[in-house]
Picture 1 (cartoon, rainbow, N blue to C red):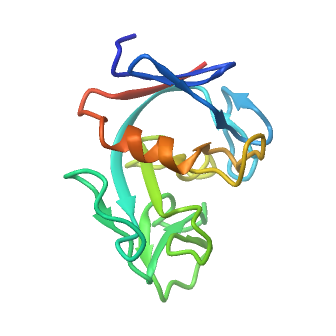
Picture 2: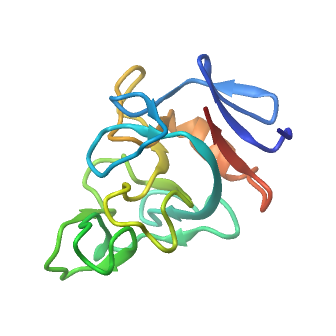
Length: 164
């Protein structure tokens, strides 16, 4: 491990010498991730992207891309676009990224089951804003918005998310 790694610990997500409180999937951590299981996948994951709502915040880092109203994330294991960003209209199951609530105002994308998704192994694992302390996710890692924003500005190409 290096100081630039994000490491999930029982106390929170450690990054660059600071441990930030976070929440994980409602089913805990698993080594056998499946679509819809509510678990956070164990492993070493790269941070491969950053998305943000430009109508709600300034660009958090140079490599961040804006989320637009038609942006969705395919979570349909039976479709060829499974675990990829797609655009509405989209006739298959997908999660809306441009939400009314602030949950996805800032998203750090991991390389979990991406870019060549194995169907049914679980779609996107994001780092995103939490609903509140102790409130679990569907498998993502969630943080306080100010902590997520601070981390987004400090991530480098070498940054990894380590979940054990």
